[in-house]
Image 1: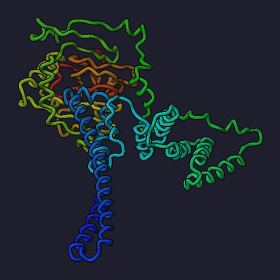
Image 2: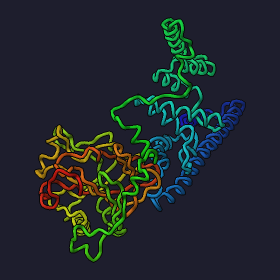
Image 3: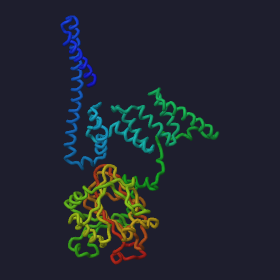
Length: 489
């Protein structure tokens, strides 16, 4: 638009130069300039209207963003606790703001809708991301949700043709040739000129014909067909994934009435530690074997806020120790940010360390630093062991303190949905409660690893999860937790 108006103005200035030289030659010719000027005025008004409309969109965007940021900044952590809000923030910064920068605001409302609801375009973006990662199982789930919302009449820039394009190939990758063929035909009925769909149709028909030729004479086509929309998740690197995710949903917990009768509450004085004789901690059994306990009122709100304040500037992508080298490295199965706090960082760190020592009866002299972790949108830590196994002897060798004998986990926030600590082999799920802590031994008294303690941090669905933990090591615990042939503590 600007280039077009500039060209008209340049033409007008060219006309003016002619007028200045020869305006006296012919009034008849000059009347043409009147009409030319009128056209320029009209073009200028059209330009102003377009710019005003664009400016109106920018103002509308600015007003909406001002209202949004005012609310989100008032409680940034609470706002980002909802995964949809966090997702939309990332989407705005990566998509909507660059569009504004280019002054191509096709829809100034896009990305500013505040509600925690995924639109058609949001779901399509998620499905496309899954597709690009080769995760066809979740591609199907997201694309089917897109179709459901489109069928419900929701307005979107995403078209059914785009959805069917991804969905048809995804179900083909999952082995459902019949449905892939049916979806491709639907796609071509909407967009007959779709070249890739045409090629896929011919390819799918050829594969189906070859499949029919291989059918045994007593088989029917119905026997070979996959029930529409029902797919098994492909096997991946995590053998207990179904159990793990089931526990995270609160399903499959094996806390039977018989087992529950063996769980008790008591006051705990840490093997008659002088510091706890007058003010013992409330202790509750979470599981009987292996023994997992929860302690109440371990950290005050003030201590929690102070530790978070110290940890925030140091937060970095959480790491795990490479079992072969012992070197800390990032891993796709651990999604969170963490930092390590020393006692010199603040008196509250030393105070919390001493408290954990008094509660457990173990020394913190050979323990690792206090680790603080923050799990945001989708934050999780898939099933893992805290101790090093026989084939991972070098994991903690550089520390010189032996294996991780026990884990003390402080919950520094409540979590609205998700975020449980689950033990797939046990069928146990422990839900976060702010100010409480859970404790368990990773090693049996024989020194061997207790493989039942394989555990995971479930994805945070709604909310923000803060934890801190202390890993106690073997060295220095010889007289505090003597070795033996039994696991009873």
